Image 1 (cartoon, rainbow, N blue to C red):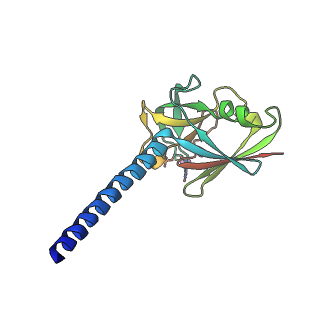
Image 2 (image 1 turned 90 degrees about the vertical axis):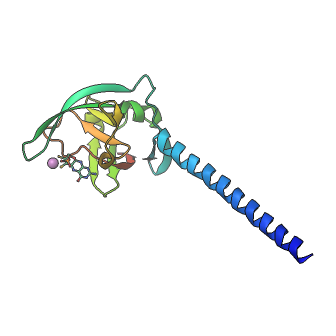
Image 3 (image 1 turned 45 degrees about the horizontal axis):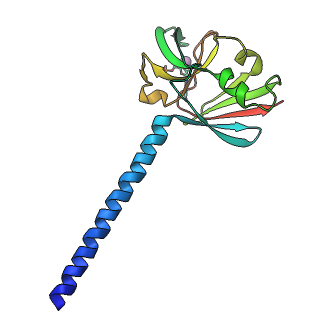
Length: 167
Ligand SMILES: Nc1nc2c(c(=O)[nH]1)N[C@H]1C(S)=C(S)[C@@H](COP(=O)(O)O)O[C@H]1N2
Ligand SMILES: [Mo]
């Protein structure tokens, strides 16, 4: 009798462990899917929207530009991304309005953009690829690339949120 109870307990414990393993595997798959789907938090006039970046979108383009550090180093770069204004214009309540756009990074680095410069074609991109590969880890999932600035100081790496406020 006592032996049977023991077997039952061992069996129940084994089932519990199996259930936990399966549950854990599912939640890990969920996190991997989130990372792979490349979501970015947009705060538009105080309201949060999750933007789902699709690299198979027709708006996704590859382009070449130069990274110009303030120390004089110039590096040729090839990125893949979507023009930030293409993304925002679709989501803004008033696409013809004037907004202040602030790009916030994981290290609290913050870059401010005007609607005028965002509207210049081929100027400001939200990039997710370098040389056809995901960005190097220090650049994060999303990075800002500005092709018409004198230096690459505002190429925000590791973007965590874009805050947009109508002026
Ligand atoms: N998040 C974040 N992005 C950043 C910076 C930073 O300190 N933090 N530095 C900027 C500067 S000054 C330059 S020149 C470019 C390239 O930086 P790197 O020299 O580290 O490659 O990234 C820009 N983006
Ligand atoms: Mo820099």
